[in-house]
Amino acid sequence: MNILVIGSGGREHALGWKIKQSKKAKNLYFAPGNAGTLEFGTNLEVGVSDFQGLKKAVLENEIDLIVVGPEVPLVEGIHDFFVGDPEIRNVKVVGPKKTGAQLEGSKDFAKDFMMRHNIPTARYFSVTKNNLDEGIEFLGSLTAPYVLKADGLAAGKGVLIINDLSEAQNSLREMLAGKFGQASKKVVIEEFLSGVEVSVFVITDGKDYKLLPEAKDYKRIGEGDTGLNTGGMGAISPVPFVDEEFISKVESRIIIPTINGLKVDQIEYNGFIFFGLINVNGDPFVIEYNVRMGDPETEAVLLRVKSDLVDLLEGAADGTLSEKEVEFEERTAVTVMLVAGGYPESYEKGKVISGLNRVANSTVFHAGTKMQENSVVTNGGRVLAVSSLGENMTEALATSYRNAELIQFEKKYYRKDLGFDL
Ligand code: AMP
Ligand code: GLY
Image (cartoon, rainbow, N blue to C red; front, side):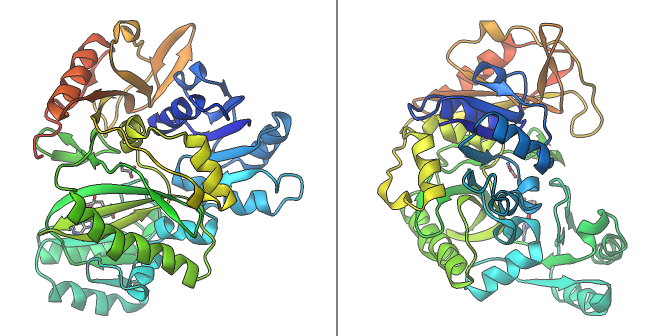
């Protein structure tokens, strides 16, 4: 099978790494990919939202299956685009259609879905400029801190958590006035939930699902979970508090009702569902749905999936997932993200990366890199995900940290405290 992975981050490099291990994979392509993905396949100079360009690439390279890494093309309807065109409708697309992708593309849609199907989540109220007064009133009925979420995609920046009521009221007004553009023309106000977060992943064909290893993601730039939010500074899998009792609550209260809800609502869905959960005194609540794998979670999680990923992707696309098995690696996997100094605020690109050839016992997934005059250079805020397996978290982290030191680029930064809370 010829396979195309859409995206250019560490998640897509990790997907390609795992796909390449399958006997079923023939030629592998990435659109647009990065310097790391060149090791496994061909990078195509096509953007993730350029559907016509992707169609052309798919026809030229006789691609049989597409895995969509990021949420944007899914929310924009890439799957519907392929199904709707007779020339490419036989190409298998792993990822939901536009309606299913609304679980991530609209917080209001997701909340409404959860209410309808009795899935535990924070109490909420959706506001537009037409019911601002009720929104202000709802804020007043909550206790601090106040959670305000832009309804639409905002590149991970659309959630504000504010301690002061009048400041929250002002921010609500600013959001509705366009603080996050179209994305915040509608705002979801939520009750604040207190607990530890965990990312749980499934692959589904819309009828059945297979649980993948869970992970904990470190979102803040600073040690001790301080400072600005990032795309993710590292991940650890498994997560100690996710024991059999907890995961069985997650399955019975959240995953199964979600899959059934999609069926009841007649939303055709195949691909990944990423449940962003919070553990509130032993009970799981949904903070958010994502309709794709997590980044950097994928760079740890896939180290623990022993099964053939292409077989699972095919199962999801063909509706034969019930015939598949997912086997987990028992050891602990971690990923440590090396980022460009300054990130998530302004940072420089184009810094030469050295020392990659000195890495031992870790797999380095490229997140923001490109080839420039035969050198690998930085090309994003998150640069490299140094992933390792170990008998336990301490051992796996020690391996990643040892290798993180061997890799050099100007103003390299990484968090040295991953796992501090586990
Ligand atoms: P989201 O984009 O919905 O995942 O929100 C981003 C982050 O905000 C989450 O990872 C949580 O840390 C935090 N957050 C979102 N909703 C809530 C909530 N209801 N209670 C507490 N924290 C929240
Ligand atoms: N690591 C969080 C995300 O992928 O959204």
